[in-house]
Image (tube, rainbow, N blue to C red; front, side, top):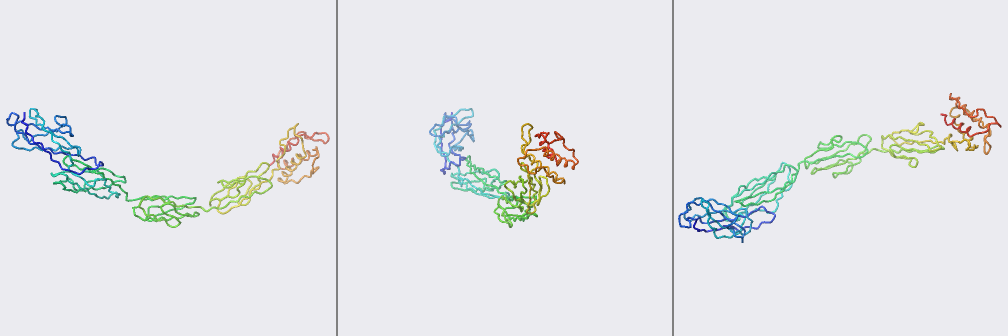
Length: 493
């Protein structure tokens, strides 16, 4: 085996302690020893294969152990005082390490462990700044640069590189060479955004097995912003922009280069009124001026003039008038305001015991509905009259309902109205004021004759009655007589 003649030395330089925000730094340790020249029996060493460099964090003894690095020899037969050097990398910065070396011949025979030497692992270099570097907001298509200073912390020569992924790139300073403690190099990094997203990544620095990183961030900013116009209100109109881009109308959104001053102009269509701007910092009814530095939204309001529609009810009857669109329920609300051009449909509904007699004013006719277009203030009168065919104790029930003078009076009124509608003269009734007079056969006979005349006038079939011939003093007055007359009158147009 080898003669154990070792000189184990360590070269390291003191460096600054880095913050925990820079975890990607690793320490190194330089080991040196004198190569053996003879075997333990004094013979010349001619079959040196390699060295094993054992290491562990102090105070643990490194050799023998499972943690070692195999180092090739430059010659199987070292001569004189050959110094062998090797750098351990990836160590914990600042931690003390024990290091020991063995020699292995080409036959695989390993020498005993050298005495352990102890030294702390240190970094090769430092990078400033140590905090996150913010490139700020940069327009897409443009770029900005920031610099990092790399400083050697060792007396030896330090050689390294810097790298960073897109949208960042290294402009200059990589690779770098630092000669001696305190030597510096400048690494320039460029940020060139391609989208409006926030970019955040690390610039990685490596040198002779040592490494560290610095976080960089930046925001891509678009060079244009979108202006959107919305129209509101009951009216209509158009909005145009200067410079051109918006014609709303149809095109209500457009992009403008940041910094552009956009002037919006509103024009109401015939019959509408432009009542003002809102949003985008615009108010009033003049032009709207927006300076485009970010997306903006503006609303233009157009309205239609409105006119009053008044409904009046007349006649001796009652009923309600409603409108579509809603607004009038007369009833209680007999006036409403409607936009110009609106067609309002009025519907009349007579109350029980009343009839709708017709419209006057801005509406005419006798149908229960009428329509009026609101191009000015309008007034409509709805006439409701009492229903002459509205009978009490209706229907009369034979053998149950007692005939009354009021029943005869109601029939006289209804028949008189029917005769008048159809051009027949008035009738002179027996016992014109019935009061408490008992119903007589003559009363029924007169009523039948009066209503039959209307049927004849209209060329209609005369009704058929119970007891066609009523004889005074013989024919008993019945409820059927009155009810048949009621039915006959109600059937007349």
